[in-house]
Amino acid sequence: MTLADAITCARAGESDGFACLFEATIPNVWLAAAMLGCPQCGSIVTQIYRKAQQSISSLRSPSDLRVWMGRICYEILLRQPEHTGRMLPALTGVLREAYAVMAELPRQERLALLLMCGEGCSAPQAAEILAVPDIEIKRAMRRARQTIAAAMKQKDQNCNTSWLIVQLAALREAQSSADAAVQQQILHCVLTDEAYVEQAQPVQDTQEAVPETPEEQPKPEEKNGFFQKLFRSRRFG
Image (cartoon, rainbow, N blue to C red):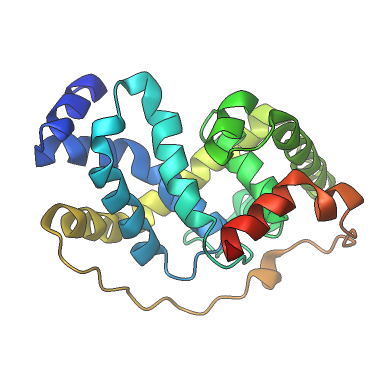
């Protein structure tokens, strides 16, 4: 089934169409929930897809899917308390070390990284999803790249944009493979309107895998920028 067919079927209320859209988008949504530190990923992602199902009439074409799903996903994710990223299963070597650095980035930098390198959004698309000026996206992406590059230089890794895209693709694949059963449970609950029962998660310490690099103090623009105003309004509004 093509995405165009899936959208037509989903808009007509056919579960196969929505299931196809779920499979196309869940790797990015699932990684975003983990990297943004959602303590109950399954419950939050179920909420995201229930909202998507309710809003399906507003999805017109495959070219709209990235921004349409992104708006729904990040609107809900940004309502959650701010945490560092959760540890992901089955990570080893450079990938584990890279994710440990990503998980500790300020949230606005993780958002830019997820959208631009993880989902392939342009700065204007990412800005549209988050409802912020695209200059803020570009600045956050630059800071994220600089921080990751400084940490990975010790591992002889050249952290350019292409390298980040490859790492995030590997993270999506590792997490989706490890949590495939949970994702299918989420889809079942959304399609049947059954309550999702959160599975117990083992306690893991993200600090163990973080390279020992000096911790920089937040820059003035990080404290007072548009991103911070956005987060405060979404958290407390």
